[in-house]
Image 1 (cartoon, helix red, strand yellow):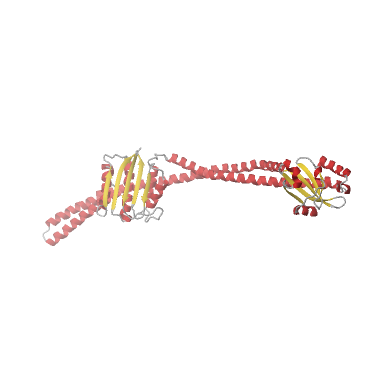
Image 2: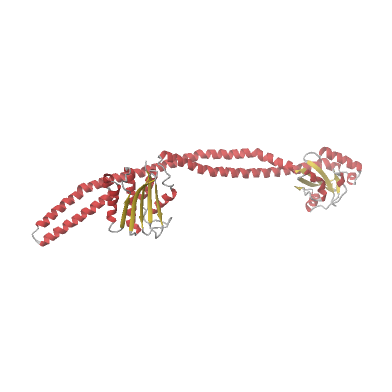
Length: 453
């Protein structure tokens, strides 16, 4: 049925007609712009939060990586610059005096926070020196990474496995970062230098880095969001003004259409219809005065055809501009509207007794009924149409229901009609709702609700 898809979309998007109240265009415009800005700003805020969280994680990871790199550099400096010159042959052979000198250097220059333990290994896995005397001389198996660092002089850092027996004295320190590298002694012998550092210092260094950069990152993102909001507000206001101008054009189109209908109806009624009525009386009189049967028959048929044409024109006048709407009320106008369809459809009109509606509401309801009934006759292939008008909870309610073929919601409706789209906009402007309920093979029900001021 023509324009049903447009009305269905309007019905689905509208709120309940009973809960809506008339609003001015400015109020609606302000509300719609605020909603649009909120819809724009909310995803932006979510995006800022996600980017901020991601940035913090990146900075935290970068901070930890930088802290581990610094730990490697400090261990390298301690091993090669402080410890290596004191790794004499006597110290490696276990001479107490040489080991004492080495121990004093280590405790004075290396064992400072966050370093808590120092070990020096040979290739066989024997601990040549440790600030924990109970470990010296013990032998444990070195891992592949440790042996590779010993042979190549590379530096490696990893979390210490405190479950291993050689690390039993470090368990009391908690989570540790183990940094080791291969160095050469004064005699050219390769050994493995190993430091244990508190991992909390690594985490703290990472936190200092991301805390330093996170405020700038989040601040820049929030500033970007705040800059975009006024731009979005301006664009939304422009769109709203365009919509208001479109609605104004639609209203003017309706008013111009009504004025033109009124002018055409007046010209037809005062000109063509009156002339035809006078001519029909003349032809009928001439038929009565005719002397031969043939002339009388021709004139009688002509008078009958002219009267039929007058009836058709008067029916057309009701369709173009219902003079009875404001003179006699909505019920007679709807009755005149249904009269031409009585021969094609089983029609029923139900108007609440004593119904009194404002003229603008009557006009809107008549136009909605007119467009809907026109579509029923043209497209619905219906046998029955029911029209009802009532007042329900402070709202004037018009329903037009047919038993035609209907259509599935969302399916393309045939022969769209611009008039119903304008009526839907006018209903929304009046604070009302134009909605449709239709199913294929089960007919269509159009419902217009308009609040009574």
